[in-house]
Amino acid sequence: MARKNKNSKPEKAAIQTDEVKKWAGDIVDAAKATINEVVDSIKEQTDDLGKKQLSAKLEKDRLLLKPVFAEMLPSSQPTSSSISSLVPFRFTMPDIINVVEKDKKHAESKACDHSLGHLSIENGLPVLNVYPHHMKDLGITFFPDMKKGIYYVDPYQKDHYIYIEDYFSQLKTARVNELEKLAYCLGATHAEILFKTNTVELEKAKKKADLGVKKGKKKLVDVKAEHSESESKKESMEVAKVINASGHDDPQVPDLVYFKNDEDIQNLIFMRMDNKSKLTDKECSIKYSNSSGIKSADAAKIQGAVDKLGGGSAGVSITDETLTENYMTLIYKIVF
Image (cartoon, rainbow, N blue to C red):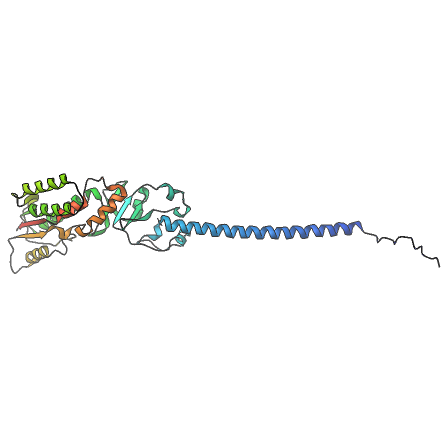
């Protein structure tokens, strides 16, 4: 037997080229799979983080910007649309509606997409700021139907809002029209609607109101002068409507809005409808503020809200109008 040479090198195992390629391929595939899993995991985590951050931003914007959607309106029906997930509650329609263009911060926020407007608090009062092209979507009536401006609710018709500059004159007209209709329905031959103002007491009240705020001496002197001039005139009288008709003996009771619960008017109707005693004429004396749209106790707060909304230059003073109404009496004379 031949002896091995101690200095000879061991033979190398033969390596098949195909096996090497397969092995290398397996390593590459494994690396690719691992890398893809890592990339997918990172992408998934990034997407989740992005979604969470977006959701958090939307929630923050909704709380800050207070967008209003159709689904939030009192008359809206339940919906399965994607927008409903953005609507956490429904709200009662505020007494003040401000028709205004969409501002930059609400226009640029995704949280306000598809919104009709947004809520705000002005001088402690809730306000619905609605965009002009969505006025019709609220399901209420605006008088007059303008494109911009501040409206206040008619408390006797909750789906009716009146432009603040026309508010007191429009409600006055509405009340006169209702009494005119009542005269015709009851079969009157003659009726008069008058407004009597106690000017002396009104001027005293104005003076007291002026003394309650900080004003210059000149203003206080002017108030005193006006008061002195009005002393000789105890009251003023305004004839709002005179009605003459042929009359009839088939009295009907119309649907009343502003005088539905007025005791004097209800007594008039009862007496006219009573066949046992034929009523020939009656005079009702009604405290005008009983059917006011805005009570004097709320006037200052509403005035402050209107001023904050930029309506301070409006041609009407809510506080002055409500103060005047407190010293007015509506006289309703009717003859059958």
